[in-house]
Image (cartoon, rainbow, N blue to C red):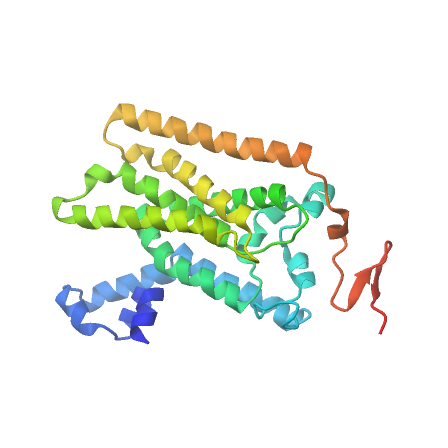
Length: 300
């Protein structure tokens, strides 16, 4: 159990008293542990995880409740409730100008299974990156990658609703490899093997995300879009950590131009080439269907 907990959230496990021998051997004092605990609780990774859990709970308590398992195998609410709360809905964005839906899918999840898989990555890898990058840079990459993931999903799958923070999390993964490359020469000699292994692991993980994104019930456009956006954002954001002025300017220029081009072209394509799937303008409550003018109960 302790090892499983460590894999999800190391700070929490240590604070609960596990691995005390390892902690003592590392020279960590109770004050260090309390400081780590405070940083964990005040991190964007933890704040977002708690917010996402509470938001998922809302439609289950005050909405239509749990969907039937044949309608939602993720143990969560009905599509009707998710749409009301801000799921990605290309039709409502284009026709009703509900552009806030670029943001809201990041805090919505299809159910507890969906939320759990994302939160594990967010609290394990996300916390590590938040410590490395700082809170401001981390939330910037997370939100901007999530926005582009939604844009990409609107272009590729305009006829589907989708929710989840996986696009934003893929953005973090996409940003990690450029960050390691940018800070390559700032590693202490004794840590070079760890850096090299970490870089290979991140590259392999990013490559594995691509085929996994094509599994059923996975929004592949959001995953790959977030991954690419995260990589470009990382180049623009962390270029100032390069020690050579020429490389610093060149990396930032490539990152900024690529980011603006990516977001600009995708937005233009969405506004000018994608037609709204009008059926999605009328997502009906469970047990009802759209008859062309209003939601009506299905015949018994």
